[in-house]
Image (cartoon, rainbow, N blue to C red; front, side, top):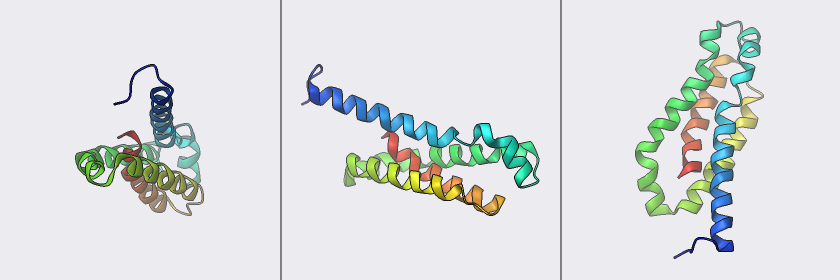
Length: 118
């Protein structure tokens, strides 16, 4: 058992905070770019907002089974893999050539981001 006030407890708390921070930074990173997304892909602002919505929906749906998976595979593995994969997907989304490709990458990112918060 990890005791509150120990160095191990502080390190774990910091790691959990960092994981949550990165998750939400990845999730909301496109929000200030929505006007540019709308212009770049010649879509309405409502369609541009889907880049945030699909990620949130994918993350919410993933919550239904990620807890069971992390119990069997291990939370550390799930959280590490989710952070790495979500970060790679964020980099790939910067090079999206089309709106559909961007939405698909954002769905994948939402699906993988949920493991960061477990």
